[in-house]
Image (tube, rainbow, N blue to C red):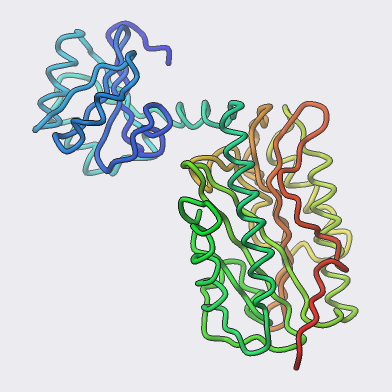
Length: 349
């Protein structure tokens, strides 16, 4: 972080604090000044200070704002930047009032921009998280039998996560059967699986604080003409987007590539979300593959590519992979097959 003289920057977003320090507790902040980096927490985490990077000064406080005031006065600070996306209006007003006459301004996305570019060890952790995800997925698919419910499948995913080496799940898994697959953010129900249902499973594992995310759409009988058409359009859109994705390309441009495929087949109106998102410590982070992102995607970002078509009251299809962005050839971190023939299950009536 480059901090101007007499300025300071306060980091309060837990994921950003974790990224900077490795801290996993519930109350920790980082304060940057021109000459010092401070990690601030309460007395519950005094043990953590023993493992803190030597470049940080660890401080235990009982009154956060009084401690901040003391540090800023020591450094003759006249302006403090706050994480504008991660602080409430009331918190902002409180800090502004208590730290007068110091000028308080928002700092948008500074740490998030740094986090976009994954270091070698981060990429390895993301790969491991996805490897565990795939092991669990393959075991869960074997449980897709006539009469099992969405909730049961989701619970099985969570049970298998730690058995296979994950620290946790990245998010609540989605198991959507039949017409429920047409809801992109479906909440699992007691809906029972029956032969002929389309099955959409969206799941992710967390390994050493790093997340994975994958979606596959399966068929419990030979897909009919409509299902096959929709699946192949989604797959074509995903493959085209992955090919278009390169370091330096704008997120909106990659999103448009997939959307153009949808439009060519008259399905664009049924693609109701962004193409993808960055992934790392958080399952959703920068950079976004969306119509709103006109910024270039940096090399060594890891993003999801997840186009979908959702036909209400019928079925939905989504295919999602994790991709490491390169200037020449990207690296797809997801190894589960996605050709339609590999995703047809044989379940009994």
